[in-house]
Image 1 (cartoon, rainbow, N blue to C red):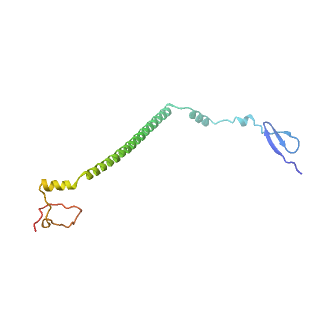
Image 2: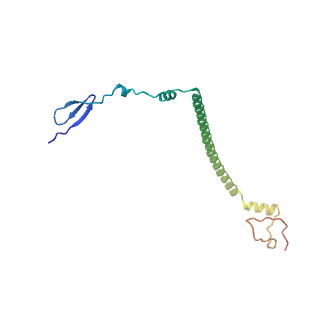
Length: 159
C-alpha cells in the first residue's frame, strides 16, 4: 500500500506529511541575478513616469475648475429637488383644503335646499305678489334641436 503524502510550504522549507514521521525538505527557489533585477529603463519611459508624477499648473487649474463646476451642479440639483419637494407638499396641502371646502360647500347647499319651504314660497308669490299659474293656452312647447338649453333671440310668436 502506497503512503499518501501532502506537501505544505512554510517559509524556506517544506513539510511532507504522510503516514510516517514528518521530514523537512528544503524548497528550491530560483535565484535571480542583479542584472535580472535591475534592467536598464529606457530614457523616454523614465521621462514619462516623471511627468505622470508631476502636476503642472494648467492641470491643477483644470481640476479645480472641474471640481467647482461639479460642486455648483450638485448644489443646484439639491436646491431644485428641495423646491420640487416643497411644491409637492404645497399641492397636497391645497388639495386637502379644496376637499374640505367642497365638503363644506356641499353641506351648506344641502342645508339651504332643506331649509327652503316651497309652500311658503307659493303662499307669498300668490297672496302677496299676486302671481298666478299660467293657463294651458299660454304655454308654448319647443323641440330642442341643438343642445340641452334654449337660447331666446327673438320674441315668442303668438298663435
